[in-house]
Length: 267
Image (cartoon, rainbow, N blue to C red; front, side, top):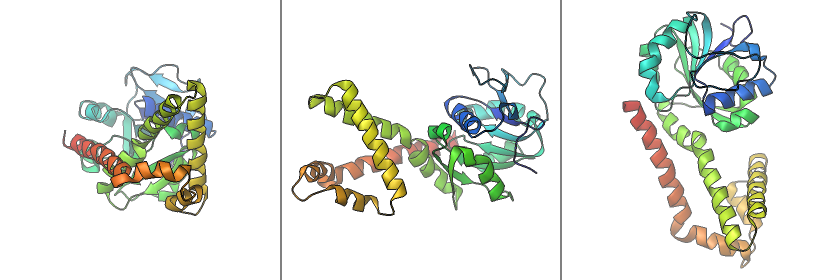
C-alpha cells in the first residue's frame, strides 16, 4: 500500500497533544496538504485550516489505511476498540506510545501492520531524530519518505532498544532545556541580566549542537579544541569532570527515563 496520504485517503491522527501536534506541524511545514490529515481528539484546539477535526469517532468507521497513534500510553487499552473500528484491513499504524510494545499493539489491532516510532518536539521544525522499529514486512524507504519532513530516522535492531531511545531522543530535549535554564541562571548569578544570559545560553547551545552535527570530530575532540591548558574552559571542565559527576548524573537521568518506559509497558 502507499504511505503517501492524500485528501482522498487521509492519514488519521488519533490524538493530537504536544507530540502529535508537533508532527502535524512538521508535515504541514514540509508542504503536505492539510486535507491529508484527520484528527480525532476531544481536546485539540486551533488546528490549522484544512485539517479535519473530530472530538470523537462519530461517523468515522473503517476508512483509514494510514494512522498515527499519539495518545497517552495509559489510554490505549480503553481506546483500542475505537481505533480498530477506524482502520481498514492491512492499515499501517505508527505508534508513539512510550513503553507500549508491538505485541500489545498487535493484539489489539490484529489486522494492522505496526511501526513503533519515537520522535521529539523538534519534528515541528523537521529536526527530530526518530527511533523506528517494526517486525512487519514494510518498505523502509516508503516509511522514511513519509517521515522525511519531520527529521532523521534511525532504525533499531531490537525493540528492546526503544526504551533507551525514548529516554535519550524522546525525553532528551527536556533535559537540554533544563541545562539551558541552569546556564542562564548561573549567568545571572555572575552578573548578567536575565534576557542577555538566556539569549547567550540558547545561542551557544544551538551553535555547539550544529557544529557537533556537521563536524566529523567527536564531542571529546570538539571540547579539546575549545580548551587551552590552564585556561577558563579547562577550569570549568575540571568541575564537570570531577569524579565523573556529569557523566554519572546524565547516566542516572537516562536510566530513570528508560526504566519508566519499561514500567509503562507492564501497566
